[in-house]
Image (tube, rainbow, N blue to C red):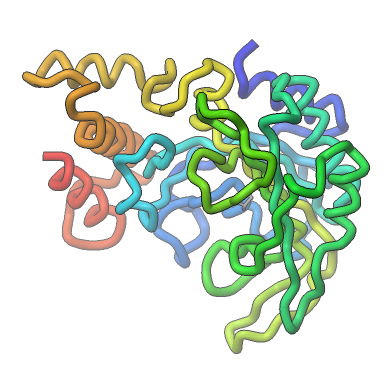
Length: 303
Ligand code: SER
């Protein structure tokens, strides 16, 4: 069974309803040019509105992030990618979210604990360290040296304002090197694969934080990263998702992928992103404004 079906089936077995992926261009949200995460189309519901499918949702969402443009060319960043997600809208919270993530990772994806590590929110002036998440991970068997605390990287918000909260991120050691005992989130051999955000706050325009009407869970798992892990390759672009496009680029090029990996990754990434922008129901074409400008830049950069 492929990763997407495995994920949806797992969360359906935990009482979630699958919702369809929204288009890449947001339908009712002028604050962003593209959906950057699975939670973006769900913002009204995270803010308290009732969702017609209930309080437990899951999906895979087409996402576009242009803030990572300078990282494109490495083995694990993409401008367009798909994000698997499960949400609790005021239903379950930290304990179930972490328990189910762990169950999915170890029992469905069969990722060995030896190659697994997490980060948790370390606390700041406004919100304390997430001791509960630390204890939950430990109770599941994650060793202390595989739990790192950060502040900036463990607080998630889509933009400047809106629903937000501390998160716990899960990492996989994607390398043939021996796995170090102590986890260092800055070591790029540890690849982030899933994020659980405990979305209980709303950041207002004046910068202050208030509690949301509900305590929500918002998670996001990268399809391309996890597919590479399941297929045993240390480079996303070597997985089945990218194989055809890389082979086609090699056909047109005097070089092989091994000779020019960075350039070929950029071309492959930008072709895929441009294709999904053009195919979106919003009918975007290259131009000098908004989404059309991004599309034009991607095509130029690729050329
Ligand atoms: N919104 C969070 C993220 O994008 C979890 O999905 O990482």
